[in-house]
Image (cartoon, rainbow, N blue to C red; front, side, top):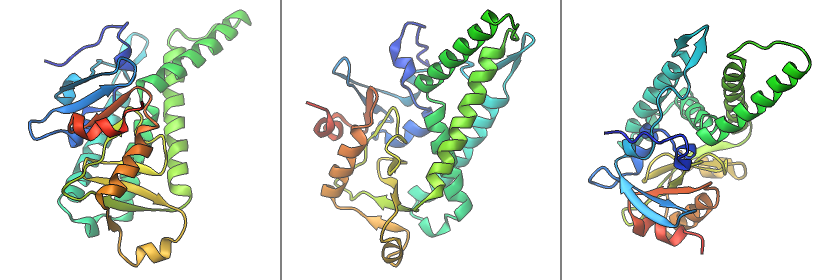
Length: 253
């Protein structure tokens, strides 16, 4: 059964989609989570980390519009397809458009995070309060519409940032090391974890020399450890990995 957080549950403000977390599970299909606020580790299937219905559903005159949620579903499906290709080792089959699809997914991963969506709602609420105080009458659903519009704008802005400068290479972890991720996996803008075995690295210098080696770099366990430390510093509250042992070295002391 999916865990449905209550409105006062702070964890629900920090979850990322199931389609993303599935790639950081152990062999039993569990993702391991470390809560940096409570300092309590736990593990569960990705569907139980957090769940909230109709988070992106827009209401028009009392009727629910699932357009945004359907768009996310399509985006997630495309991402999952590309990731299967990558995880199978067919890196040479990843086209420039596939890269854009992946970066688009990551940009929306940033913008659709409930913690950021909450900020968008707060901003829109203040704006509508100002309009009301100015004797203007906003539509009853204008806060929701404004927040959803802001989310899309933020995602497109982040996508532009991700594609404006530099190039992206795959980094593959060795058999004795794994990547971790967080509740805000795109925040560092340099290392984007795609799974426990593969991430995208944004390169802005020495691109030509690196490209001579192809679009894939095999990392040492030491390099993976350094990358994980960078990733962990951008967590808002939660660290995710395939085991407590993988997460433990990167828990702030």
